[in-house]
Image (cartoon, rainbow, N blue to C red; front, side, top):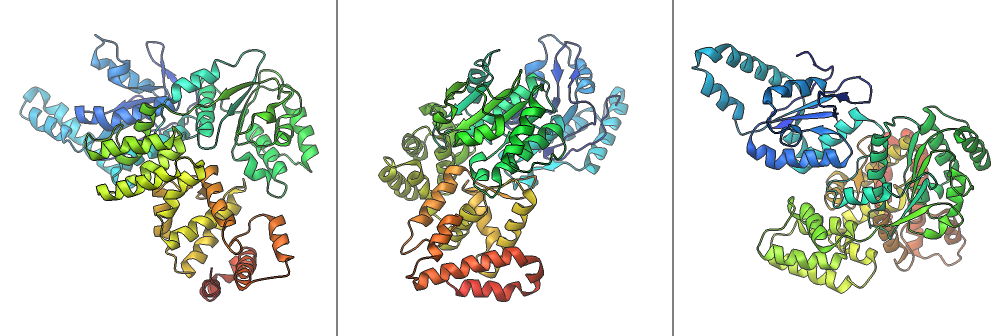
Length: 554
């Protein structure tokens, strides 16, 4: 075909993604519209199911996508589709199990006038069978997971700067529009504020993607995640300053200290148009160090988006504040149902009635709805639903941490230990190689302690207590869930089992009355530090050392 692409992928009972090395700006069709993706499929069931969800996800992510029932004008000939295909940057064919192609071949085989066309079909299908792509088996039979795998691949092809938003965007487009319309020539900084778990980061990612699309931006942009957590690390602010400059210029910039970083950012950005997102900022000093202390942030037409739980960090700055509100009941029920039943609404049985009770307790907080939906998806009997619902009712007047703790309580002891290790030691930082090493060493420790980490981590992912960064293979966790885990540890008696703050660790070491439990903790802390420092040389002796760790009571 004239518009063939360089990289191709297709699958049976799945889909393929074709990409090219062309410029980011999408091709332009005969009608003046621009499309980055063309979805090709056949069959009414496919259209109403998988294709519909994939199309919605692409559009929500800001990707201009062609689908015939939306973009083909009434009366326009289907033959014109070839023109759209040739002018689209990415071609995604979807082949289902409905045997549509086989049925079409059989129906036309005996027609003399169509013999050559039928032969071409057969040859095309043989070529398809030789081409690798995404298969439903790649997602363990879960269409929602397959959709997200494809979406992430397409986003990388269209613009590597795009951020994956979430599995089930709910009421997102209207909120993105509300944020963007508040930008004008005078105000170039937006603070997205609200309680933890309300969806600030999700909204910031969607706004970021939309602005990248609207302004055709591929460079001069940066998304700094987890600013609060990274800032707590040694030289954390400098690490963030380096990442900001690296993202914008595509090269390393030497920074000696925080003040040097402030000076270089101000100097380099003063005549530039940049788009920067600072996610989870909790102190004005972080803002000053990354965007400068001037009232409006960066100069010129630059746009800065900041997410925070604390509006006071913006005091004295020229900005607008967008306060993220809770989802209404219908939106909440839809989000819960997507996670619990993989469909936008519950069935009209006892699960439907109890689902509404769960949603009422979640209070419109997306994080709670996501975690609760995943939790209740594992329950089949009405007794299990009612028992856990009763526990939620007891916690509904408590803070988000207490409500989320029901998922932690559902874990067995081994899973709980791994979850707390991740929450305390393995979250945060922008040095991806170091984070990946920590994960690998932790896996060795858990295996040596017979905690079955591979199975445990899969369960933690299923319950949305953790996630794995696809690009860097590192652990990730929502800050509310991380804080919930650390809060559990801090309440342990007689002393916490884990220490992650340097000052608290030093204070603990200086205490005179050291109990046996504390000695176990010290053993763990010493071993963890030594293991992290010397793990490469210890791999041949790992089992002996890990058994010591298990014997210590860890």
